[in-house]
Image 1 (spheres, rainbow, N blue to C red):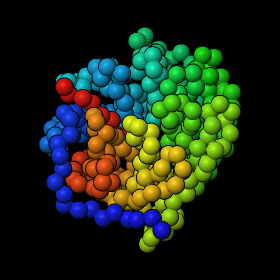
Image 2 (image 1 turned 45 degrees about the horizontal axis):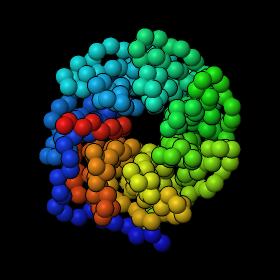
Image 3 (image 1 turned 90 degrees about the vertical axis):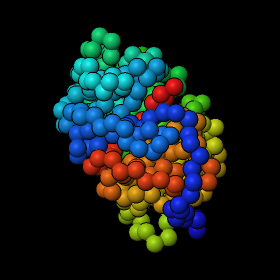
Image 4 (image 1 turned 90 degrees about the horizontal axis):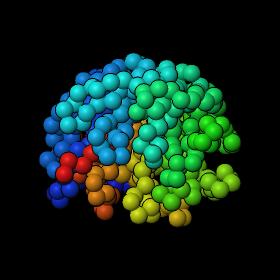
Length: 319
């Protein structure tokens, strides 16, 4: 059985200067956390039901999926001003920005499509039919492949970003939520919330390499629901949020073995690293807070209160 780490009152070394931006799904706001003081320094009003969040490559703007407003909002992170909206299709939930910093790939949950938007011209350049209830979205490091996961179809859909056509569909377990490529682009990882697994694929031929399962002492298997995950900078470890189990798992990315479970807030959704990857910030939807994890010790060191039902998280350097 894997070790369960219990929160301790430990002193934390200050991280490099920056901010964690957190979308609050039920408040229609974004909380901005200073990573040096661990305080919420700003609360920014945005569109209805904000979920997905990502910064441009130069951090000059931040994109937010305002799901119930059926739009992607573009915000100046320095002032918090909403600059304009982008056409997104209905109910945008997650998205991924292409390495060219120009094309945004958006999952439209209600429409069973993925929408591609040119952020410079502010126009839709493609809409791609995918499975039912698409949610997760990822772009390969070389920009050649986009992935959409469909929650009801239980598939990862592989899209050629030059032709905007599907070239493969791979089955995963029930209700896939999130997808990420490894840093070198050789593997695709997909979480399945109801299936309780993370599936790893070989990008070269879309074959399945491994399936990771989780088991926590004292937690019913139905409550172990993988959602978001992040790779450490060295690519050696994967942190996976496990929803209503209130834990984050750590996986050895080479052996696919679960190494630890870390107790955090209630119904943990997504995460973001600070600038130097020494700390990880988790969004805990039901408890309305963010847990700060010390990456080296894999120990929770802070709890930060934010808005109602925090969902997405993204880092922005301030120096």
